[in-house]
Amino acid sequence: MTGNSKCIPSEKIYWVQRYLSGEDSARHIAESLHVNATAFLQWVRIYQSLGEAGLLSKSQNSKYTAELKKVAVQDYLAGVDSLSGVCKKYGIRSRTQLVSQGDGGNVLDFCCNYCRLYLER
Image 1 (cartoon, rainbow, N blue to C red):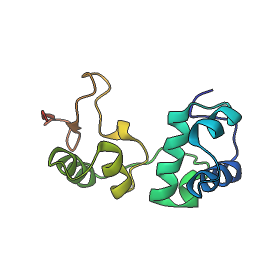
Image 2 (image 1 turned 120 degrees about the vertical axis):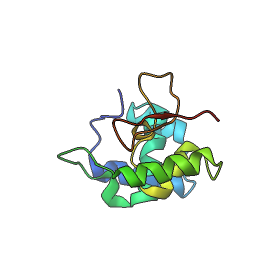
Image 3 (image 1 turned 60 degrees about the vertical axis):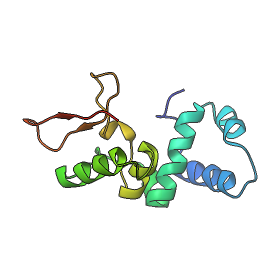
């Protein structure tokens, strides 16, 4: 099963809280829920960044301003934090908001369509 599990939000919250309190491991919880461990850890990151509301079902995708993405990318490239850490800091639900899907995973500045900056670390 992928990140789009059949888990209802209250179950996600329960298991994330159980993990964060040290009662269970991410691997064991993911196996029990039949989800990928990476997906479960994304729930944890979302919960830590956005709280319980972050794990509630959404009717549409999140939208982020160009300025927010620009600041997040700059922090990552300056070595302020890991890509996951930067997303957590700025409340960005998924690292893929800052990673190019068609360029081998290089971090891009998606701030404007006409000026994509390929920045190397």
